[in-house]
Image 1: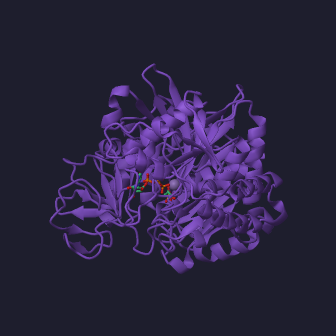
Image 2 (image 1 turned 90 degrees about the horizontal axis):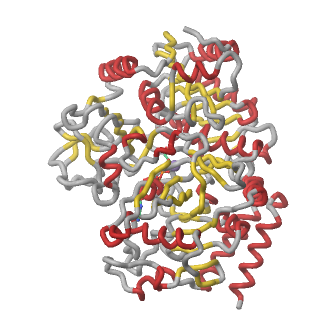
Image 3 (image 1 turned 90 degrees about the vertical axis):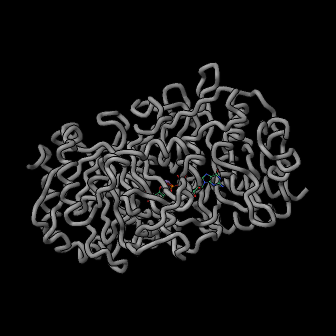
Length: 586
Ligand code: GTP
Ligand code: SPV
Ligand code: MN
């Protein structure tokens, strides 16, 4: 088979010549095809079939132990001009990058099958969707793309003879970390990924297309591609307020997007609708407001810590048709992870393929082990997921892991100040990326690893978007991760976070007042509903307090970060910096 698209056929042919697969298979997206691919992967051991009585339609996969998270140091933006990639990205000249990767791709698929996956980010045919084609030698990738995006025949049909598409090439090659590269060529609408089999490195529709190339396109075309969840909160009158929230990887997007109202707030009758858990594409619609769509069709969520208490909606979703990666495999072919529901299995095989028992020093599941599940299986999924306009955004929420400093919640004074709040985000490093865990690093808008161009221009783009809107969303910052002197979290988090969202919703509807502080508005103690919680107003006061000395110290970090961008940094951001410095001085 080939397609009706001469340019696509020509490109596939060229890539085949380089990678030398034995066979080429065009993916049609059918159920029959899924079964066939699974059967093949069971034979080779690429996948293990799970207990079909307990977990119907579920499969298990282990990645190479040296290949369990995104490798940011091997991820490059390849633009002609180095300054266009900016100090926030690794950069390589396109010609050099192609040459270097070609050496690894050459013959890498010998003895293997090349799968051609046409996929759509966003509903097939929607005016805001983007089409890509991923070539890969991994069945695991095909089956994941099948859940995370819309794939197959309909997409090719939509692409027609001459539609635009992103060219994505992936080969596991030999999975050698020294021969691994994740390359983005925004000027060619092309992605080359080699030497990895881990999610964010190889599901090219996700971080590579929807965020890195997406953000680049967004600036060109006047929209935003963001690392954000999208959720709706319905009040008892039936009114739904939609929020988009950016937290760095493994900092709570999935959990917040599908939270279940806590016992104490239940009688208020709130209902949560999940639109997305990782990526938001946002445009200004004809009403002058900001509207968001989730371009994905599934969730690629962190397993450890997910249980019936922290995330009951996800636990319900992942009972069927789910791909489990790097979790613990039990004797009865079910799965488990640290922080999962009891009982703890008496024995199992860990993420590295070794025998594991309770008390074994090493973890059963890798901290960044994940599940891949169709979004439609989530009980709280919004019917707006398939709607091409998406949902109107009332508030944008930034947040990260900060043991100190950032209060539980505060509201920015204006859009411009909100951009500053997003631009100065920082968070402790998690297992979702290689590097020293726990170290605080600046991660503006949770986009540091995903902004496909110079971040100074990105801040400028955010400022411009604000000017273009006639009705800007309010901007907030939250921190669920503040700790006491002994390192315990002060705030219970998870479902209880609704108490903070309730205040945010009240602010958006001008129903509650805020208390002005140098960094923004915080809630009055009475305005956070603590019903049913073992938290006093005094405790809450601590979570909302602002220590000027700590903030003065923090400002040095802001300055240092902004200076990296030199004269490209927008003046408005420096104005906000100066205004904050002045407020902290009194
Ligand atoms: P990516 O998929 O990597 O982009 O991350 P995400 O932001 O969707 O992360 P996720 O929701 O999966 O968060 C995972 C980690 O955050 C787990 O360890 C959770 O237990 C923890 N977590 C989530 N919400 C909360 C919270 O409200 N409080 C606390 N203390 N931990 C939380
Ligand atoms: C993240 O790391 O932010 C993720 C997982 O959402 S991955 O798709 O691997 O990037
Ligand atoms: Mn993410």
